[in-house]
Length: 179
Image (cartoon, rainbow, N blue to C red; front, side, top):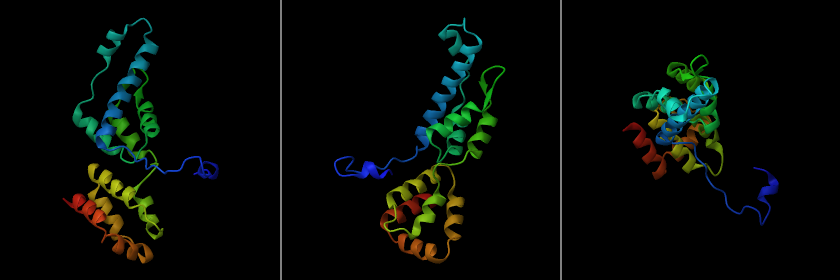
């Protein structure tokens, strides 16, 4: 954070802004895909009215939206938007769902569980953020990934994890993950 913004009288509180949960990612993907396809169709067919354009936009089935939202775990709005923009079939303005899934999976994350595990030696450790990251990973079906990352910890990271895992909030998050 910029030092100037921390000066007395400026911003006196810190606010935790978390990544989007599964339901929010689903809503974002549904809205962005419709909006982007709408713009593409409008650009290539300027004489079409809004109702006609809306009729040309296919709905992505809920099951596919859920798969896409799980693939977008730890992505911010701009990263999701960028992946959608890269997944448009230029010829007809339609979203290629398979291509979008690949783009979401390969997009670099602005945050990750690894980043929190790397911070295990920090004092104080951001427990609230870590717990939410575990919950997001659980929603995305990443249980095995989380457990592998924790099992791979060594040295100070491992001993700090062992201490942290005694915290009731962390234990509860890990139990939710394993349920």
